[in-house]
Length: 304
Image 1: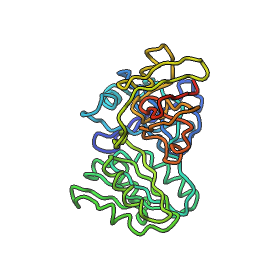
Image 2 (image 1 turned 45 degrees about the vertical axis):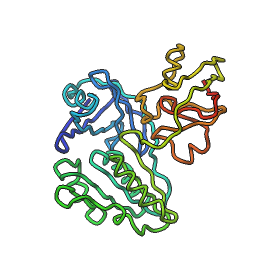
Image 3 (image 1 turned 120 degrees about the horizontal axis):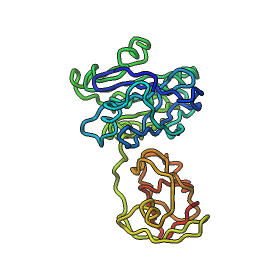
């Protein structure tokens, strides 16, 4: 790590560069990396605009989390080394006539690069940045000062809860709405956009969405490349069943959030339970996140 600074209460910015001095791989707006905290826990962080060849991530210290952010804050210092993955992108900016970005708290991190890309494309855009107080909102003052006609900062402790249904009403056709933040905010964004013609919404979640699903049932799993066939019990995930059978598959978060375990589907109907694939990608039934998603057709064949 080459630099670190606080950017809000309990929120620090970390600049990462290659230990070899070589530029880090190029990335696109909306990308994230896995970072191994000093404690050994792997967490995913969105990439923010940074100098050429470097990465910038922003981490909120969460005492009520699972320990990853606390380890990064407490144990990672300038000049320390940390392992990171190559960037992956499940939140890329689609082509649209205009954009509305909605960020809740630390959800501003992937939005920063998306704003830069929208500006570079010359498309109309605006940002709704929501947080409890300005002191807890990374880059709020900088964004408002740099783009006063495009950025609305909403402090809920001062102004109360923002009605997103009203804030997002009447969007022009061809608008794409990108949102990152707490689940309740993302649900409100989706509800506000759903009835509007030719308005699409895209979200990135901190945790996987909880939805009504069919109960988990046992199913047969076949691996097309290795020829292995096994049973996935109702109380185990595909990834856990593969672990038990000695089959190695890439994984990281094991919560359907990061996309590391995405695996091609040869045949079988998938119950998608991740927060990565879009509705269109799910309907294509060509891949799945094997850490959380399951099979509803009794038999599933994967490209493993």
